[in-house]
Image 1 (cartoon, helix red, strand yellow):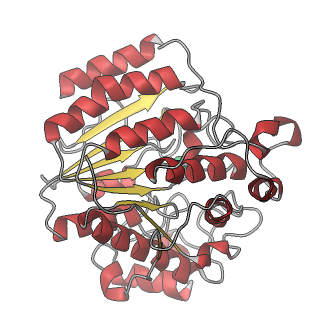
Image 2 (image 1 turned 180 degrees about the vertical axis):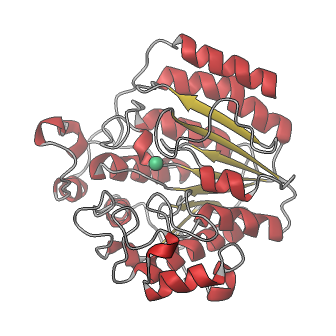
Image 3 (image 1 turned 30 degrees about the vertical axis):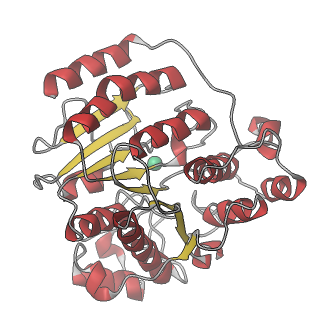
Length: 362
Ligand SMILES: [Zn+2]
């Protein structure tokens, strides 16, 4: 799909502020580091960077219950799965969460104008209409899809490449004939939904994969299941959640993909629709998150990925820290490069079974 307009990078400085708290897996530098790395590489030129607006109360209540939106705003209480270890209440929470939704709405509007749009702070795919879930307060991918539909897209394909099942998005559109959802995630992980036979109300496709998923296996699933499904559907828009927890080295999951495999997967999917919104998602290793999403923007915006990072960019990676990744597990190349070495391997029988199940369902 050739696009006349330059790609857009939607973000906001609100993500540079400390949030969640030091003991939370998301209390690490993520989006700010991606913005800094892209700037250091000269990859955010005038016209490319778009500041995210904050979603209004009226916008938020198009999917979320008004009393829940108020609870997030006021930082009150347990009734909504708020204010606990999983979904802590912290200063600036509402501004951050509303900006994330506003960013996905803006991203969808720009995508309908014909731009590929990257919104790395997006991808809060577990958020529910009336409660927080899995570190997600609001569900910004839902708003990207709602905006695309409202702006005239007749069909939207949602593909979730995060290590966890995209449960909130699947359920939000379960009965909407215009939307199909696909989720590739590690089996046996929270939220323990999205089994191979789970088709929701007939519009969902779930690919729960064994731990250690390698590049060859991702490629096989794309070629055999996801790309054919997308080609048959011929969606007018596509929304992707690209959680960095699917990469090797993530402390909360055990998939083993390289970022180059994911960059290629995203590029192939984006090419299938005239409008494309690319979101972030989970990811709890600050080095692999920053390298994946920076390189993803590089690829989406047509830049060559450098073999070795220039010193100012390497310094940004060197300044990151994370309690969940032990010193001995930190690979030296995480500080000097963007691209991982590919992790090719055998396509295990379990992947074959998964492809057969999906052929039957399709
Ligand atoms: Zn995840």
